[in-house]
Amino acid sequence: MEAAQQILRDRGTGSADGFSVNMSFTRQEGDHLFHNAEVGPAQDTDESPMSILTLSPGEHLLHTNKFLRLTHIPEEEGLCMTSSDHRHARAAQLPAPDNREDLVTLLSDTEDAMYPFFREGSAEDYVKTVAFGVFDLLKRTWTIWMRNPKSSDPLLEIPLLFTWNT
Image (cartoon, rainbow, N blue to C red; front, side, top):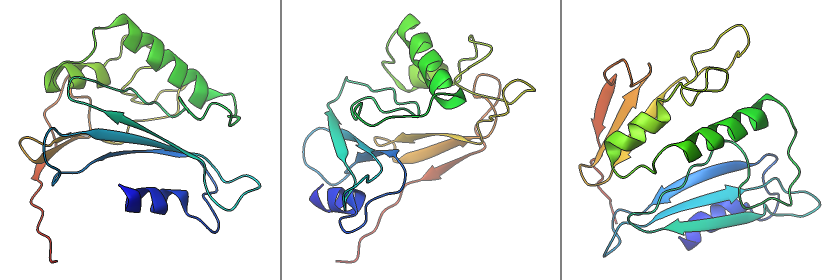
């Protein structure tokens, strides 16, 4: 985890933009833990500000293109923030995902016609979801859809077969 933090902080220059990274380490003992790192742009400093949240089994986090913890960093208002707010509001109306099926149902939701989770692009909303993927650490697979999972099968499922030369 320390090496990941050093890379994300990018000491010396920092990042020019903000982003979010989800991580899990498959070789750790015990329960799988998940980590969400919010990384902000380096402003008047030589490294990126960062906040890491660790999630245990049974917990979940929804992160939709806006800072949830680095709230001191100003973000531009507009389509991205409006869409993020709408998706968080829609998720609050639904039960928390408890399994893979629940997660896919949430992330393929289109109930909010103007700002759905799975965005297919329209005249009003030029943004389109290019791909949607689910990592299953128990099955060690990565399943990818290019169309809404609500109405289509996955495009492919990739086995996660890691080998390390140490």
